[in-house]
Image (cartoon, rainbow, N blue to C red; front, side):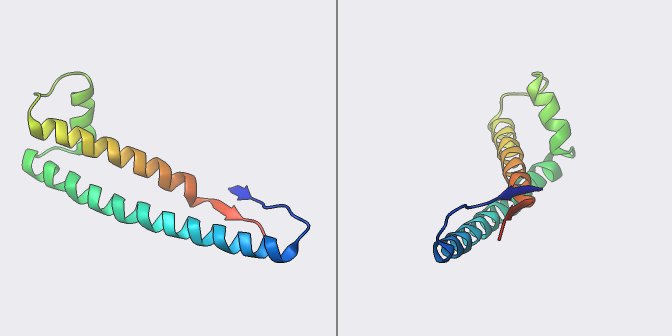
Amino acid sequence: MTQLNIITDDQQKKQKVDALLKQALDRESGIIKAALERTLANLAAFETKYSKTSDEFFRQYEVGETDDSADSVDWAGEYRIYLSLREQSNALKDLVVCK
């Protein structure tokens, strides 16, 4: 768990900042979740079209075992977006604003 603690002598200010921070983190988590859902849907379309998992495709792509078609480039781009969003989601998952 990662804790975020705002320190100030002004308790009213701390409560306001804590509430704003929690709202911002919740909003960002929602944005990331929606983006992940869209990206996973895009990846699923490629997986269905080419009958392989995105993990398998990306391993092949990284070592040059795929063609340079527009679909390959787009699929690799979607997978990179997925990896980034998953990393962001995991970073926020256990973040707690201390009271």
